[in-house]
Amino acid sequence: MQWLFATPTVEHLAARMSKEATASPTAEDDSSLQVLLPLRTAGHLAPLFCVHPMFGLAWNYSGLAPHLDSQRPIYGLQTPVALEQDARVESITALAARYVEEIRSVQPHGPYHLLGWSLGGVIAHAMATRLQADGEDVQTLVMLDSTRHTDPVRFRSELVGLLAELGIDIGDDDSTDELSIERAAILLESIPNELVALTPERVQRMYAGAARSLPISSAFEPAVFDGDLLYFSAADEPDRECRQEWQRYVSGNVVEIELPCGHADLLSTASVAVIGPILENEVVTSR
Image (cartoon, rainbow, N blue to C red):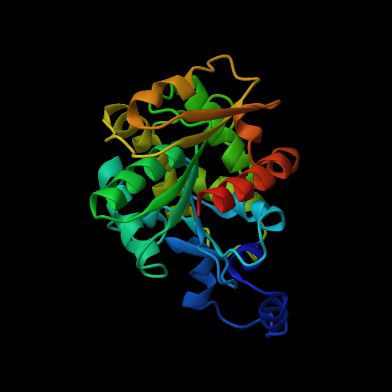
């Protein structure tokens, strides 16, 4: 599974598959967990950078590729706690600073195009204002149902959904505050052995980082982004005021597009088929 997200072309994927199945794992096996995840590297257009939701992985964004211009590179931004044992989720500002450094390693200057789902939208906004403070051009800022004030019920719903996509069932009675190493090991038993990048220790750190994101997001006070915000909302969610909270943090307009789905389904096949073309048109129009 990790090869599908970390290998940019069919040729490279075929080469990987042709290696001996018994070969010892190497650092290359961790490529799907690196902070800057290349989902598509080919193309001469300005890249789209997609910031992870709560659990910290950006794999889901690969579904956007067929709906965007084939000449537009796509990168995901993922939590550093997965691979870096000493990394901590301290603040939105600190995460934004780290991610800006990462995207500048492949695109030193704008125009920048940023997108984030859930917590990722909050971080993307912080990245956008930081880049603008440095004099850079941020032409596109997109949020997928993002809010700074996620309540515990919604937090758990999203976390359960994201973990379920990895084959991890945390059950109905487990606390979202922490995940024991024993519990992490049990949960990972359902994941194929080929997914060597995920280990109990890494899942435990990512889980802790996700739990930590709840208070730091609520405490974060964003700067004002100079421009418009494209906001995709989940029409089936009971609290649909998320868009309104961002109006005072942008100088332009908040353009809302409702999708007939829940928060956890915003990157489903059906949703992405709607989001992708609109997003590409927005990026083309803005450049």
